[in-house]
Length: 192
Image (cartoon, rainbow, N blue to C red; front, side, top):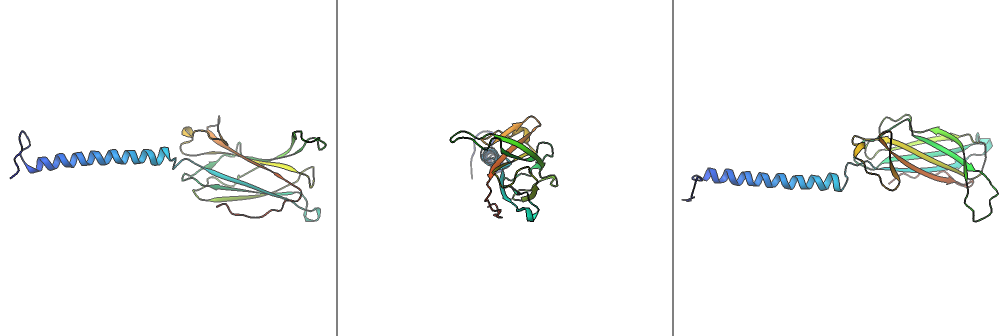
């Protein structure tokens, strides 16, 4: 028979203490796992991948610039695009005769609503929006830029990263842009 000195006189007292110690250890291990899983690895921090494609259409095909914007939620949290602050802008070269290697300045020629039909984007979901832009230029390089303002359930805790900045409207803004050349061809390539 097991002899225990002091107030621990029965096997049931010893098993209760061992069970309590094991439970406390499991809670500590679970807490550490949750900390690294959700905070350090940022499992539920929203991440958005944005891609822009464009192609000039011939005047016989109604003319204009066809732009496709693909947005994929690559995070594990639902994101909510905000109508205010989300847009596609187009700019042309302000002075087409610039001696090389001078920097080019861009002149804004239009701003267009983007993702107005989408209230939220689920994790892993790809949202594609096609726009036909009527611009005062034709078959010239045009800079198109998508600015996406979105919120998520913990937007106040989101830390800014390189291409992401915290916005005073209590959300996060992602900006993606590219220059559409006169010979670019629009091709659909799914975001991996």
